[in-house]
Image (tube, rainbow, N blue to C red; front, side, top):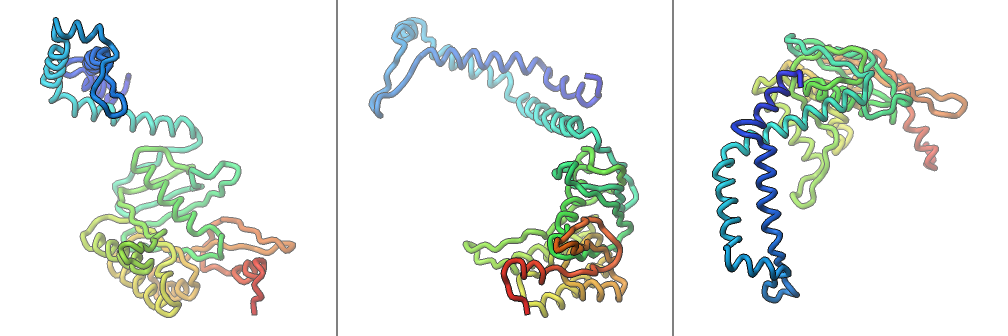
Length: 322
């Protein structure tokens, strides 16, 4: 190993003696125990399949020697096991990150900046989407209080975009390469409310589950934590009037709290209202109809979504849209 971190981990596995040799020593003791050949027949009394061992044990007390050896091993290594376990765990983590980087040579390591509340990506894509299908986008969000609102038609890519930003930020702050041509991020905690579900056992509706996540978000922001929030379709578990009123109220409150994050929504009026009050920057994903086919570009554009495809999708599902 040439890395200082790996050298330190290797040194920990030899402190104060070799972990490998000690584990082998324990293995030999346990293998000797297996020579006893104990088994039970249909819950009956204990039987020995190795009668030769029974005879030798009666003379030389092998069982007692094995127990004493195990106790000596425990006394000798008890205090070192946490250090060895920690070193092996950290090596496994580093090995996984190295494997991820090796398997994706086109990914890059982003710059981690001390500038607060900064996200800047070029040709950002989702690492779990194949290169042939992946559509990448440029995106940046700077400064405490910056909020981006993403609108778009159905299946246009809003939720995938939120996941793309979130998973790449997790990779960046873990020390892994990201699926982009360049990146610059500050240290942020990530808070998501994207797939809230009801819980029949606890008597929690999907709307109540959403409210709980919002409460946690507001509490975390009030604590002064640097947070990037990712919200997908706020308050979808209630009626349209309350959803619109609650959505705008939450965005306004987040803006007043100088929160930092991205909101995806189908509500175009909500996006226009937020833009009119200058509390969010609007982006959108759009689709087009070409020769009777719906085409999605999955490209992020400035402004509010300009097309609608829900009615067409419903018609194609056999619904007679009025």
